[in-house]
Length: 104
Image 1 (cartoon, rainbow, N blue to C red):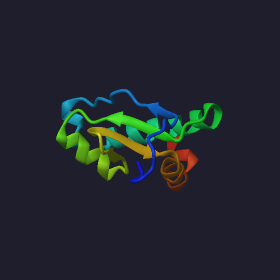
Image 2: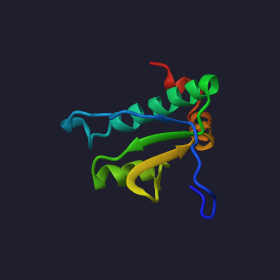
Image 3: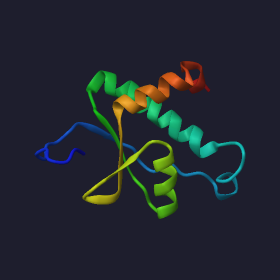
């Protein structure tokens, strides 16, 4: 992720696809955002146990790419649709939303 640094592996957690039914995608209920926030929370909790510096995902479409970007993910240079969220940013999101936000 840094220019001028030698390539090295970083432990990360790969998120699978998060799907939301079409009629709910643009509703005011924020179903997709809530699911992604919960996945970030879970990845953050798991990283405390097994390590992990990044949350990784693959944006399926350009529209999803932009949505994930707005949620704080960054594109990797070598693969435009592979995106990462540094765990330190995930921690900030979790803290800003509060623990109660993730209880269903």
